[in-house]
Image (cartoon, rainbow, N blue to C red):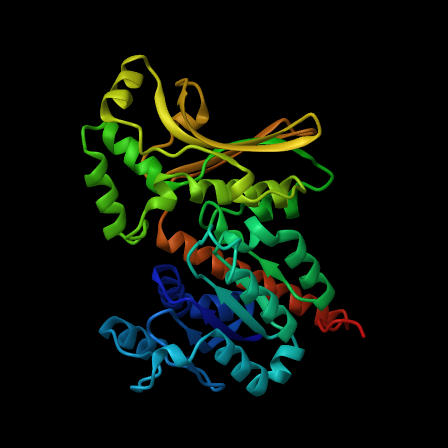
Length: 367
């Protein structure tokens, strides 16, 4: 299956995804019968480019690294944005959109101040144009999941977001594909790698600032790491998990939230001296008919599976009505894992499209 990709956002994750596409091209083709080409890219500071015949990934990466406009011109970068890109895609890839072969890859940064916009608009407009959508941005799932899922279903398109929580670990696929007729009653997890790295580093004698700087240099934490430090990233992930796994209607604003800025090395060392470890824990449960989400530092008993998580490791414990507690751990995290989540969702879209065509079903919405 041939897929045309539109990239909204070209930061660390998107650029790693582009490289991963090249690295895994033979695997995609030989094992999954998938061939991809990037036909459009739009960025916040490096302009936008579109070519229905495909853009050179090497050239895109070189232009971005040099600080020039990614379309290779000196035109006003601000004049070529997402609206322009989608207009070009609608004009030049109308047939591909109708056949379900266009996929929008949305990797813009989380913004909790605007209710999930403009990322939600990106998803809505892409679905309206006939494209599938894959996002690593938590905002569309944390603020607008029900609406966007309904729009995708009505359009006969896919809306996937495996990279929004725990990088490439298949949390949403796990429940959707392998836990049918099983209800998630509550969950607990360590879902923010930056804060877990900082807390682990302080246990080992390093300073908060030194650990955070390392995360920023690695591209895991943003230059403004307040979303990590103040718990907003974990709150957005908590809302996403509530909405998808527990059929909730949460947002990051409805999740009780406390970050790690007030955690000092003395407090970390005191907890360790008592055989405990401090971790930023995200959780949700039903109380009196309400779904309550919470993010806060907790002192964990050494027997708690979440207390075993070091550095960039993440984990999630799902308490179910049938299987009891199911746990999934991420022992290696980073940009490659998040980029892989995009790739995994892309393969799922291709497989489902192939199955639909083999059954004689069109992916196009019913009249």
